[in-house]
Image (cartoon, rainbow, N blue to C red; front, top):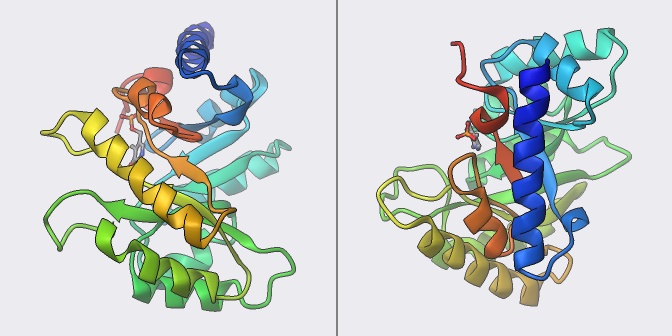
Length: 227
Ligand SMILES: *Cc1c(COP(=O)(O)O)cnc(C)c1O
């Protein structure tokens, strides 16, 4: 518990510094702690010390974890950050409040059906594919506006903005700037879609410098994942 607290404190300090270095407020940035491959108890421990947003990338793992956390009486917000199979959309959206990985038209169809009867819209990010490989998940930057129009036409979805993962073999600043450029274009079409989900343990300070509003941080807080 104390190790978790000290790692969380270090990350919090870095988020605050990165925000203030860019003339931004810490309050404009949401920390999503990625709890994948860690047990529900760690989520409860982190909730105890003030974390309220958690990210998961596999429905099979996240669903029972979310149920366990709810059973323990903790209310947290779950963010789905991984590639989602269309046939798992309904299940994942039964506990997730924010989908960061809306990455293809077929998933949009499935998500649209899953949220059709909702009273409140679901928050979604469009995930960008920042590589040249068409087979990777995500929308190529040149196709973002067309896909965004489809999202905006789907009832019960609230388009928050764009999500991206920096490539392994490139300077993350280059990829984060590309996300920012796409975000500026998107905001001309949808002024409210102003949020950017970018930045992980190794690169979140660069992401904040490029305008990230949601950082998805795992190992820097949870430690090495046990499985
Ligand atoms: C695992 C994961 C993260 C967190 O990665 P760390 O390097 O552990 O911070 C963030 N985003 C996505 C989409 C992930 O799958």
